[in-house]
Length: 319
Image 1: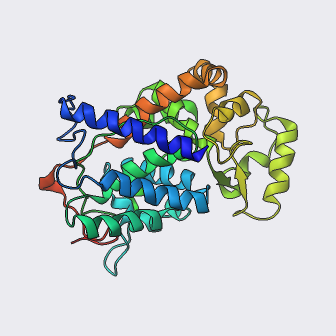
Image 2: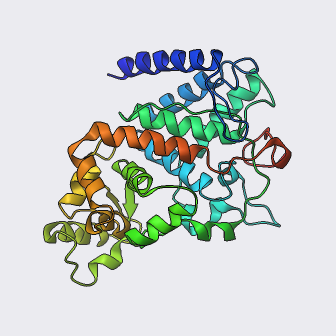
């Protein structure tokens, strides 16, 4: 199965390279397909190898890499600010309570180290995050999507900026407003939420739903969550029954009133988003197609030009 995936992804990368050669247009702040074709042609393969090796050892890291892209891009744009370590003079984004459960940093470090040995000072950490998230989606069985490269690494990472991350307690209207401020449509919001087909949530992010009767939650599922959370706030609950497979099971769970987070279940409860949830639950191919488009948009969010960034030698610290 995994060998077939590798053949498919390599074929798709050939197509992407052909698009770059014939001049596929791309207009997002200097990003382009085949950006490293001349300066570091092995960059994509190195990232893919790092992701594949890590996920073979621990499939749960796929969710971590996708979440890392979101937590990076939603704050200050896709500039690898999430990777910077705190210093004595500054507490960085990664030390925010919202980011303490992020995983996968070592995968980015491994890819960066090998790339630096091959073509030093060329490939940004921001591009590595975007490539790694894409490869994680595909490795887990999701759609492969093209991304352009050419992002630069930002020089700012402050814990206070993470207050702009969407809370798991937002309703559909608030989610739509929050994402809409960054140019995402209602369809994008629901499709991107489908990334919760991978991974888990900690009880601290949903236990409030269990304290009072909740008509939007299936009663037997509520008992399951209560049992899970009896072990403490850090206990983890999978978002759906196939936590390591990228599929549409998340949307099926919402239809059964078995969404883990309030911000998950609200997508089915709200008339603004219910039809999209039902559509994705019925048609996985449509979900995959819309997710591809939304992830391309996410990967391009507020990228920095070279004058505002750099290519870090070490993803955890400024040059």
